[in-house]
Amino acid sequence: QKEVEQNSGPLSVPEGAIASLNCTYSDRGSQSFFWYRQYSGKSPELIMFIYSNGDKEDGRFTAQLNKASQYVSLLIRDSQPSDSATYLCAVKERLFGSGTASKLTFGTGTRLQVTL
Amino acid sequence: GAVVSQHPSWVICKSGTSVKIECRSLDFQATTMFWYRQFPKQSLMLMATSNEGSKATYEQGVEKDKFLINHASLTLSTLTVTSAHPEDSSFYICSARVQTPRGLGTDTQYFGPGTRLTVL
Image (cartoon, rainbow over all chains, first blue to last red; front, side, top):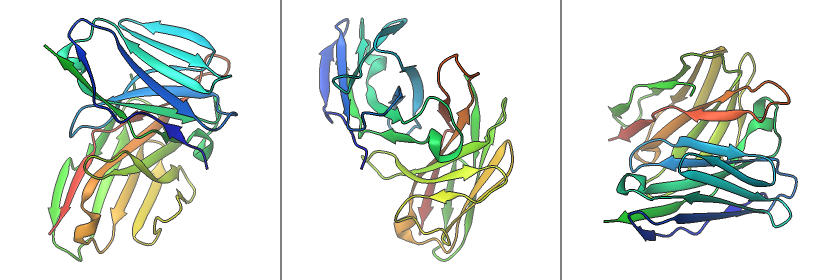
């Protein structure tokens, strides 16, 4: 069974610091990786995705992928209280494809708390 | 980003009644939509994959006769919870697959705002 693992947290970081969120996955054939943010009582919101080894930056967010180690991470620079949420890591088996081929496997999420 | 809507945003019903939830892709066509359920303080649980023009694919343990899914058009999928009971009370969220041109990345999923169902 394909698994995606995250530390449930809470991960507490002071305002302005870098938050580092980690995720490991079991299916070596996975090809694309997603980070979603979910505020309490709301639905997930896509932050970014990555499918090539290395780093991908988007504003204050950087996703890092290491397929050999089956590890993906999300760095949040200059953390703000508004970043306090649960961050979900999701993995997809293929880059493209309809139906169940585009199904995401989610981790349980890491709760991030940014303190003043 | 792509916009996905859900209706209603919340519903309260009596035990034994059926509830229909709509999921719409507003600015794109979605051949594939997904239905999730999330209980308090738990992660998303995929219930089924909804395919336009064909039958839905249900995850193991999800009763297809209880959770009826219809994806009759490229912009609309519906989930009907039949004969709802208090244990069906949950946050139901749909998502839609957004296609990316081949060679330019990967398909992504965008989520609707969710429907909170309370069965009395």
